[in-house]
Amino acid sequence: MASSTWQLIALAIYFAGMIAIGFWAKGKNENLDDYVLGGRSLSPATAALSAGAADMSGWLLMGLPGALYMTGFAEAWMAIGLTIGAWVNWKLVAPRLRIYTEVTKNAVTVPVFFHNRLRDNTKLLRVLTSLITLIFFTFYASSGMVAGGKFFQSSFALDFHWGMLLIAGITVLYTLFGGFLGASYTDMVQGLLMLAALLLLPIMALFYVGGPAGAVETIQQVNPTALSWFAGTSFLGIISAAAWGLGYFGQPHIITRFMALRSAADAPTGRRIGIGWMVLTVVGACSAGLIGIAFFAKHPEATLTDTDAAESVFLDLSQILLHPFISGFILSAVLAAVMSTLSSQLVVCSSALAEDLFGVVSSRKLSNSEGLWLGRAGVLVISLIAGVLAWNPDSSVLELVSFAWAGFGAAFGPLVLLSLFWKKLTNWGAIVGLIAATITVFVWGTNEALHSTMYEIVPGFIVNIVLAVVVSLVTYKHNPEIEAEFEETQAQMRALKR
Image (cartoon, rainbow, N blue to C red; front, side, top):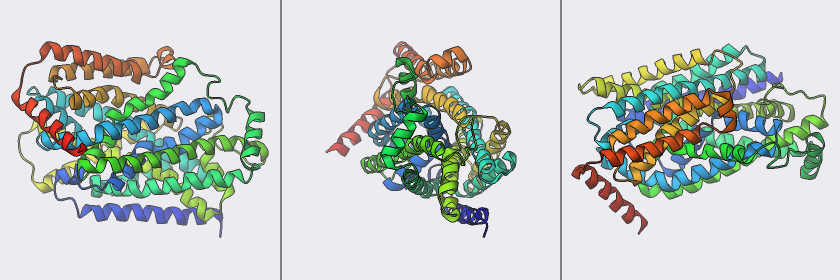
């Protein structure tokens, strides 16, 4: 049997499993709240693994190994910053957000939480947060589609556009019906698949390069600076890369997992599982990129498909080293990284359209079936727009993710932290900070000179938090309801720590 046939069988099994989970989850959705937050029923393991898989996307198995292959350890500062940021996010934000979103009239989306928490009678904050969600997630979702197209192009020599449409179509199918629960449970399975792949492949590759010692020796011969943490970078460059960790506080597709936990008491267990998974997968991805340097140097007959950015190094190693059926499941892990993030983004975009914007423009209460179908329509609309943006096969996965990550991190991150920990944040402080941060990210991120000096999330985050605090101090007025909810959250947090 041809190797491609074995791989296609493995992929077919994977696709069938994802679709089956999506249709199973369909039966759990009775209304729009179930569709966008799953009835707050996630176990800590499901929340942790699905948050990790939704977080990492194709960057983990394509962008990160490629960056390490091209440059070396200097690119790993990003991974270190992300790991620290994820830990802090689970530690500080997860339990408090789970409590506070329920205290503030059971908010099921981030825009609704801001609206309820700050009593924004203008509804401007809810509209802005919803529009920013839609704008940045269309970029983010398009990165997943680009990664899917590149996957099939490098693995099966399939036309980029057909590969992109296949990935988008299957992901949209199970997300369309399964909603948040479908995305969460498929993400959990995909997270386990990613973990297995990232542990197996680097270990296998070591046998072909003379073990750890042989790998280090060859890497140093090919690129003497590859194992240096500081070569080719600067202090600002390191800060800029590590600053990716700031983005976690404002990523809707991640923090909604905190909101969906069964209770705040599950957060510590979720943190241990989630960070353990993250450390293992990031180390595996970095190892694959570095060992790839040694492998292709020692085996000149083997070729790297993507010679420009090396984003295919993980895919190429799996096809060269493993039995086609096993490599098919390794390839499925790459798709898992892509599809898990894409599905989560589509659900959040759906909630922005159906729950947030519709709630602003119409006071009519939707029936359960109307809410579900409006949510599904949102999935279709965003997937079509993202598909148009992804149509260019030369788009960089890492660049698309970078821009969207900075947008959410700078726009939402400071507001999440201030909403949770500072009683005096006002709706006008949040609105001004949000607008200023979004403009900063767009201006900074599209200016090559500024972008190459510092990642745009840093100035955006600083501008947001400074303006939000200053404007809030000027516009603050005592509100008994807001203060009562803040104190109730504080009391529940104290009870949790006993």
